[in-house]
Image (cartoon, rainbow, N blue to C red; front, side, top):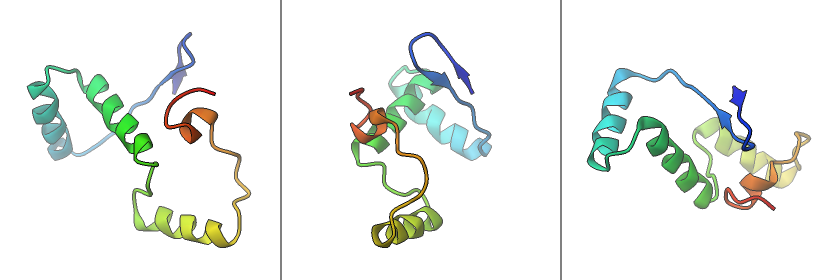
Length: 85
């Protein structure tokens, strides 16, 4: 993961071609790049409260309600729906 001067990072992922086809069909209607469309998806996920993405993460979230996590705190931008501060 590389960082640029604006406090952002570039990420990459390997996904099935069917997923890429779906992403491309949606982003092309909006005349957006893959990167821009995926950024919108992540921003939407954060706006929705960053819900768990699978059963394991949901189970961990439920356990943390009982016993707080010992993992580092979320970055302020995540806590604030993608906004700093």
